[in-house]
Length: 352
Figure (cartoon, rainbow, N blue to C red):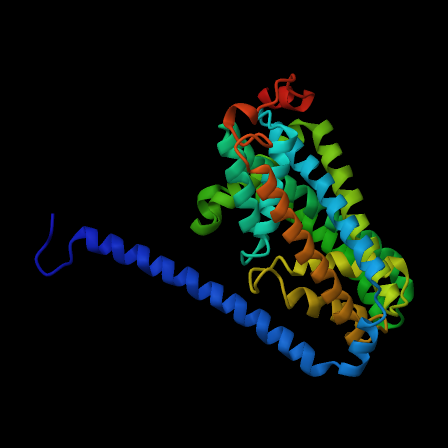
């Protein structure tokens, strides 16, 4: 019922939706602007001749092997994601899971963060299996396993790479890692015990899904250990590929340095301040490697080469998505998306 002097409720609702849409568009443009500004500053600060010389040292064979390694790693990632989704009794078949995962990987090229790709693959898996909640929670559990392994690689890499530093830098690395780990362990009980209503409203959905995913991890230890092992293999492989690219263009640092710097740059890129982490990841990697005596020009070139591998892998994933999205391919139809085999042990445990 309209009140004199006030706009009707329908108009207020439309205005609220439009304002929310405008805020999302503004955030998107701010992220794009951040990436453009950071990359522009990096290109202005580095010596061009040194960067061109480093870029010319990379061969097509090295780049092709890096691309093959990237796609192999994400093939294992698709298997891990399918395992996490099927822990919720989804029975998603392999080809259907590959199609959904490839769609998410391709969407990461077009969306402002990897969260958009996760949402797309969860949406497709939920429509294919009729269990959207299992697809969402499986995706969250998949990301949780990646973050846990990233923290492990950073910790081990920091402990081993401390010898490559001297003076206050070595002391900073040796002290910050155990302190950060201790603070994180102390904060975990506070996070778990805090009521959901006390969190900011915009984060409650994500926090609730993350907590449920962690409980699923705890109740299905076999699946959790498999997921962590696959994530460890995949991320370690990506670190080795980046170290190989770096060595090909003249970056001579101990391998442990890469296990510290590359996961840290990857985690920094997750901050929602840039478009897909572009700029933030490159600047973080350059700053971290500079502590070990690597010229920023070489670090930037190595990061851009890996970014080209990511783009090529995303485009290939889009091609896979398109090929498997035919009416009779890859479990597109709902009846084909289910696996007729018995549910895995971890899925039975999750019913308890």
